[in-house]
Length: 185
Image 1 (cartoon, rainbow, N blue to C red):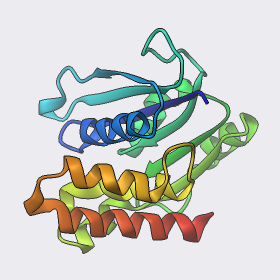
Image 2: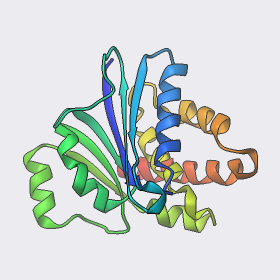
Image 3: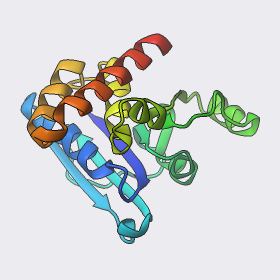
């Protein structure tokens, strides 16, 4: 199996934690995984891009239109990094919107890109864990059960990576993300 995943967002949104969870979930499932992170001014709200490749790859970089999946923790970052996504790819986008602008819908349809909108911020806020929107996105993604990324496998890694004092709430947000994914699939 080969899978190329792009996680995008801004600093403080949990992009790097989510990408670590995805990479280590794959490794624990017996897959080879490599990653590359780009997070220059992320501490000041700048862009964060994490590239994860599962399978037998020599380089962690993902070329233009090679990505299978984009997990966008910010809608604006999705637009900036859409070039990574291949024809026929999948995008999960954190937004409170119910639909994308018509011009974007036309582009995604033309490129046969399947996309899902999730209000991950709303889910996290409901659980009083505003900084855990990343867990909702991971939950939604796990509902797709793509390769090693099943709800059980990702939840096991969340249990290992999230500090104990935040674990219960993060798992609740993750479960809500799974439910949101199951409703939209």
